[in-house]
Image (cartoon, rainbow, N blue to C red):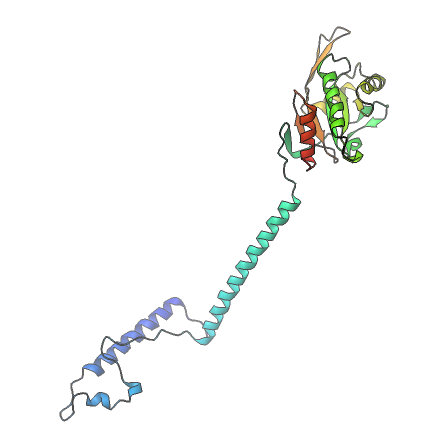
Length: 278
């Protein structure tokens, strides 16, 4: 049996009520025949079939065929179950995403880079003369600073601060302590040998990097590090440069940047925050 549409059901209900009202009205208002006592007609009808007085008839609710009712009940039940299942799955998916999606760290003194920026694949030269690129930064954390060995002020001060940061983090396991990488913006004077002789004044673990002029320009431009020679014709020229410190993660990505003035305590504090220990 097919299920009835809503309009068809309403039409049948209307016709059913109109017919019942017509019948009831005829039965309840008919005059008694001659010789019949008042109410004789109704006494001839069994109590179970006796019609109520006009206006007192209670209409039974129209019942859908049992097959349709069963289908509707099942659809309602299935819809409720499906909605509940969808809500549960959505909640579980949200929890999984929150647990497995890295969220940007709220730093107190630096600026988090979100999403992290992969360092360019520029081929540079380490202080030992060996090739150096971003793969050399993988597997450990690094604090990277750009400067030059003839710098009279900001560079030695910053390198001294970075040496203090290493001491602030002495309690960490060796693999958790950040490496310090010094990238020269003066490759014309900062040879690997010059850098190798310069950095141990601050910390023997520091790593120095230089390269060709083209390679240094490419690497610094990709990271937004500006640098320019001042009095380029003189032998003791200076170099203006961005004095930021960058935090590089074990995947070779820049994840945070710090601007001067620097504090060893502040740098160490934010570093621990990035590690999830602050």
